[in-house]
Length: 181
Ligand code: S3P
Image (cartoon, rainbow, N blue to C red; front, side):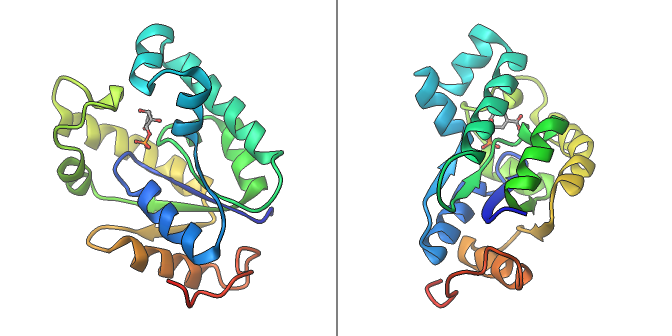
């Protein structure tokens, strides 16, 4: 296993905020696949979906993690909620480092993403139904993709980061003190 830390999970699970807490605690840079793709394409994720479609977006995700895996240093990476759906991506992530699944309940997702307009997969129609269906379809995939699973509902990002560090004791990500959390 590589030394990087990768956060996976559904939209609204808190991958970016937990990633920030972990990156701070471990003094590592934080990357986010959605941000990298938006910068590279000079376009928002919604616009990429609109103009090129979901499949093209998924290929951009694969390209992005391929590039990240060959990048220098040890980093924390938060990945888009659908990125682990491709088997090839799951393999790349598992080789790159410790993959952590932030498991979230549908109610938390709905509370956090109420009024959100940046996620094309949740726009329009019955959002509750869509979240429940996508979450139940994807849960086994997330479980399979991860080395460690952490439940996030009702916890602060720092608490979750602390739990991740505790659960990963002995793994290669433990190269910095956890006192800074
Ligand atoms: C997606 C999740 C989004 C973004 C895109 C598709 C998904 O990222 O990549 O809208 O398929 O779950 P977040 O998980 O960061 O919201």
